[in-house]
Image 1 (tube, rainbow, N blue to C red):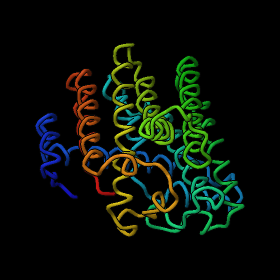
Image 2 (cartoon, helix red, strand yellow):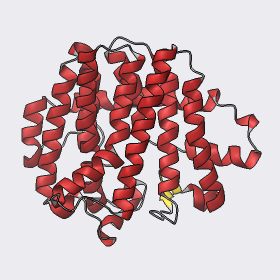
Image 3 (spheres, rainbow, N blue to C red):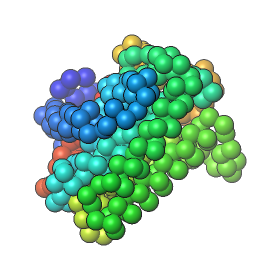
Image 4 (cartoon, helix red, strand yellow):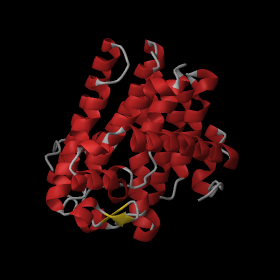
Length: 316
């Protein structure tokens, strides 16, 4: 979908609640694209690739610079701006978060986990460079992430908070991956609650972390941090509900990665415990929550609302 909002019956309420239009969705797309370019350039120019063995540097560049929406680091920048900060206040944090995200993708794609051959429309890193190199490259990305924050120009208190935030988000993400891949979900939870627990950790944790890290970089006050956390919680879960729907409604060629694997593997997802229509209703509910949270930041939260609207109607 490019610049056109789906206003079919299941989205009518969504449009009414959020005042979504094709222009606000396009604004979200433009905002995300602009921030993504800034992050891409920083990753390309600010990492000292020359200090690495040549084949490790090539693998790292492949895994880090191989495309993607850059939504998470863009959220760091946008949340920093929303509380009055500047891009340069948040660049290191945004890049560090993206390195953790890239590490998670590289390791998640490995044969021992999801065993995927395609990511972002190209061969996954272990297909491209071999499994040993992919494992070690993921290790490198995680180490680099915390090194970037440690060397940032932020004051010591902010650096400490950023490290703690990123470490917590990463731990939660790993816990979500364990639940999703190896099980261990609390048996007393309903199937829907189990899916929510997986998603709030596996995908939602780093998105919430992105929003909170942006707030920390922009010296947000307690009220602003509460709003950013609520926004991150809503958009994080919504992002994965949309992903689950795309997995059953779109082709691998369109999405840029394998589809239909969750159902084939017997994993619990939103479509497996709810109807597709109910999933769309959940997307509506979470979008409304995200937009309401962004409005608590005043006019500066407008771009965050537009990003949430874009995420609700994305098709890849």
